[in-house]
Amino acid sequence: MVKDLIAYGFDPLKLDTIGAFTRPDNKASIRVLEKCGFRYACYNTLIERNYYQISPDTFQQRLT
Image 1 (cartoon, helix red, strand yellow):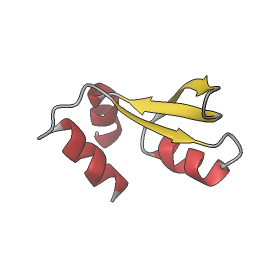
Image 2 (spheres, rainbow, N blue to C red):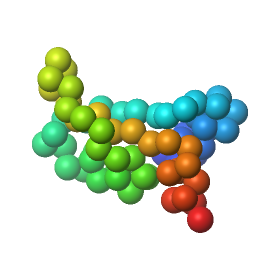
Image 3 (cartoon, rainbow, N blue to C red):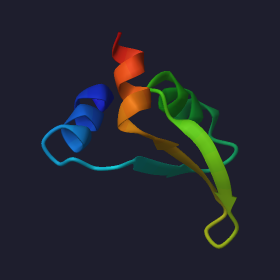
């Protein structure tokens, strides 16, 4: 399901990147993001969340 949504963002929508925020202590959400190919980008101090992102190239590599 998550991979289908990511594919939709990159194929018909032509997004450059897709990002997601999660609490640093939410290990389950972090695991889901990492399994889908998202990588940690930075910590947002304003909302106290980790920011993860994925690019179309990284996503395509995960599919092969």
